[in-house]
Image (cartoon, rainbow, N blue to C red; front, side):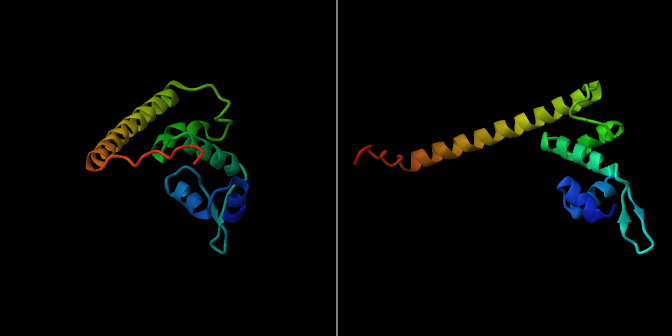
Length: 125
């Protein structure tokens, strides 16, 4: 399969596929004309990569799942290493959310101190 075919089959862009290849998540061979050629099984692998990324993991996190990317990652029982990656990523996301809430609250307080909020519209007028 050429890169465009894999892109269409997976909903990824060719650029994303090249990036996954650079990161060692997928492999291709080169045709005589220099075009990348992928084994059809790469479609499953890319779909699994997308599934993990959509779940909030990073490409670095996905590296841990390399041995299972050719199967059904969504239906497979979780491994201890996979659970650790997920828990670690969740902790990072929770810390980022907490930091953003703090910034939002500071901004709201500063705006309230600078000028009281406009009155709420009266229903029915």
